[in-house]
Length: 229
Ligand code: CDP
Image (cartoon, rainbow, N blue to C red; front, side, top):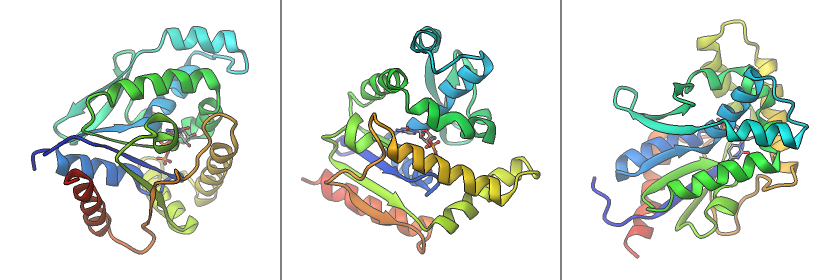
């Protein structure tokens, strides 16, 4: 389908409630660009870990951010925009639990958020974009035409993420995944800078009991209502 007009669609919500699946499918149907903002925080965290950056020091954080270049390139084979950190494809390594364990601490740092948000806004300049994350509808694009806030039962979220991670690492336990999701949701919603909140004008989509097809159909309906205005 060709875009009839370009709008900005934001999808925020809790860890592992299927935001990226919906965002990717929605962007594909609309001929839009999909940007996974969480991947940016994960890539920054990966850089900090690899380079032993002491992120309690503002000076070290600022220096490190000056050496970070983040880019997205569409991969035809996977039909996904994949993230590159200083020219290296890190799309898969950033999903590791080692990164997930630190990402919320790193994402709570003011300088890190300013760095990421500036790039995210640039990517949305031409509209025609679906971006998912935690603060996209509240901070990054507060005037977005369509804002979706996704949620799902905790047990379902843990099960989905466990399945995903277990495929790559059979040593992982349900307990580890559960603890990580709970910890991230806590830090993400209690941090000082742009905490995870539902935007006042966001529509809630609870996908506990619906299929991927059903959630896509619903989101497309909302998008079309906005496109025709
Ligand atoms: O896939 P999942 O929902 O588990 O997480 P993600 O979207 O990959 O985001 C990883 C982490 O990045 C989150 O737990 C947040 O700490 C941070 N994040 C953020 O602070 N703001 C965003 N817009 C996106 C992600």
